[in-house]
Length: 227
Image 1 (tube, rainbow, N blue to C red):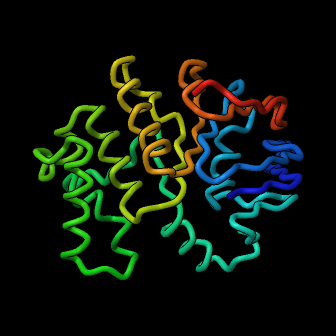
Image 2 (cartoon, rainbow, N blue to C red; image 1 turned 30 degrees about the vertical axis):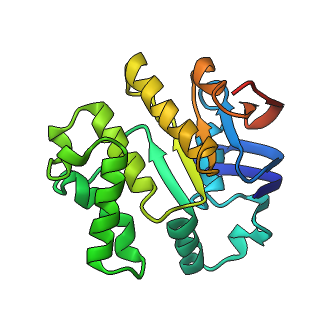
């Protein structure tokens, strides 16, 4: 699904350049579950957002299904993200003045479906994630675990091939962390979605099928797990 060829990223500031990624090359097979770990500042989130087409590399290529993502126009790249990629973030990023159901509907506002179809799909996703009785609640009226499940439902709104998760259990207690990881694993194993997850947790990293470790922006190991 993804092929990265010598991907590098440098951020320039007044003090010079900071190299977030250094010549990263790897393949991510369709239907795999890749977990990414490494020390703070090792480039994990930069790599994840590069997979998602949100950070443009300063060197190398990011191929998705044979297409060089960053050869696309900004409009086509945005369309690719909306159709093919679902994002799950540590901070949830729910719109505070929208209901849980309306938050799930947000990605569908940019697709071609009717409002009625979008609402029906959003309700189906809420029900699937055990949130059918929380559709009309605002984010502040939900527990942190419920907020993260709403964020996962939103990520699934347009039926994406890929789920990109950045520390999805970082704000959760161990019990809720296990619940969220099981949801992600089911999306991978039962539905065949490709999942790429950044985590600081060695236990969470083992849930995937492949584990990538970054140090100082470079890939130091890629190995299968028992996930």
